Image (cartoon, rainbow, N blue to C red; front, side, top):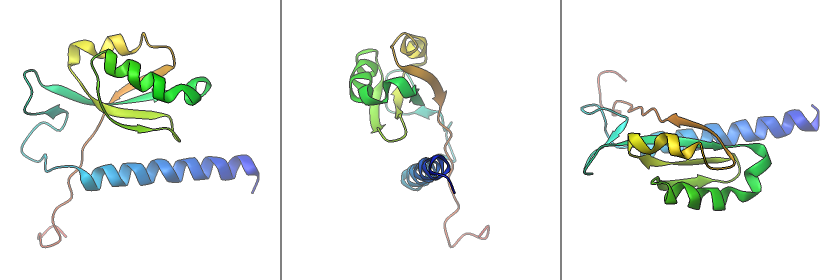
Length: 120
C-alpha cells in the first residue's frame, strides 16, 4: 500500500467514526422532521460545512466566522475539515461568502430501533 492510500484510508475511517458517533448521540427524531431543531423562534436546519483543503489550517477562524454569520456551531472537526451545527434557513447562503467554505449540506439523521424492538 502506498502512503497516499493509507492517508486516504485513515481520513475515511475517521469520517465514518465521526458519523457513527453523531448517529449514536442523536435524539429520537422519528416523530419530527430530522432537519429541524425544535425550541427556537424559527426552526433551524442542521448543517455540515466543508472547508477546502487550502484553508484547513484556518478552520478555527472559519468556525468563528460561521458563528458571526448566524450559525450555531456545535462541533469543529479539524482533521476532516468539517464544521457542524445549525442555522436559520434564510442565513445559509451567507455562509458561502466566507473564504474557505467549500460546501454546505443539510445533515441527515438516523435513529436505530432499540435492541428490544421486533425490528432487530
